[in-house]
Every structure is written in structure tokens, then in C-alpha cells.
Picture 1 (cartoon, helix red, strand yellow):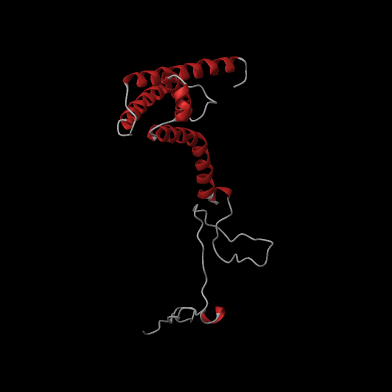
Picture 2 (cartoon, rainbow, N blue to C red):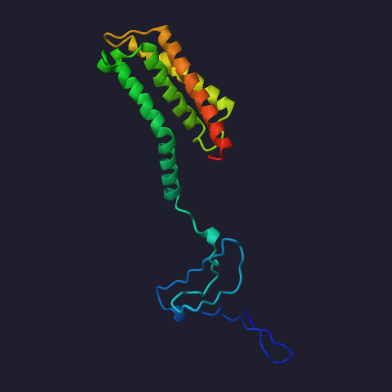
Length: 201
């Protein structure tokens, strides 16, 4: 390409671009980290000379530090076990007792008393789990759902006993279960209101 002369005597010869390969040496690269918040600016100075600040870096922020998900999930798992664990253990116990052909110690108590007492405890644990604990008030809807679930489980338990040798299903047992569940939920509702008025909750 021919050069052109200017009035001041200088020429407009094309100049090759500057070469910087010899500065860093062969095989070295510069890593530039962009600010995730988009706040580009001059490199920040840091008193630690061992840290590299030759490019655009993200300023340290607490919100940029991720919280370990495992810690949160572990605490959530412990809470779920505390709330739902006793209920599932109680359900398994009822299923196990219904699977036995004979329970020696149960023969000395009236059948209706055993069923009502058994489902009184189940109803309280059911309401506790559905309400995510008993620290907050238990709504009437939660009490109703707990009662319905207990009655449905009582029906399924009687059906289960039809297939167990020397056991049989009885409608009166379901009624006893329902009475016990209602008594348990009523006692829970009244007892919690009493404790709340006394400032214990």
C-alpha cells in the first residue's frame, strides 16, 4: 500500500499492531473475571499482595455466598421426623397388633375400651402432624381432617383383620374407634385453649 505525505512532512504508513507476546511469556494466559452484578470498574486494591487483581473482579458480597443446601435439608429432615415420626410409628404399631392372631393381655379389658383408647392417642398424633406441631392453634378444619383420617384408617384396619386367622371385623369396633378419636381431638382442643389462657403456650 503506497504511503501518503502530509503537509507537516509525516507519512501515513500503516503501522503493525503492537505485540505483547513477550510480556507474559509462552504458555501463559490472563483470566478476567466479570462482575456478576454488572458493576464494571477499575481493579480494586487489596492489601494482600498474594492476590491477583489485574482484571475486573466481583467485589465480595454476603448475598453472593451460597448457603449449603445440605444443612437446610438436614434440619428439615429432623423436623419432619419429629413431627411425623411418632404418627407413623403409632400406625405401624396398630397394624402390627391387628396382624396378631391373639393378644393375651388384651383379653382382660373390654374391647370398646381398647379401641377407644387406641384411637384417642392416634387422633392426637394425627392432629399434631397435620398442624405441624402444637405450638400454634389447631384449626377446626385440621381437627375434622384428623378425625376423618382416623375413621378411614379404622375401617381399613377392620378389613385387614378379616384376613388374619382367629380375627374378625366388627362395625362396633369402628364406632369405638371413632368415639375415641373424637374424645382425643376434643381433649386436645379444650386442653390447648386452657393452656393458652394460662399463658403456657
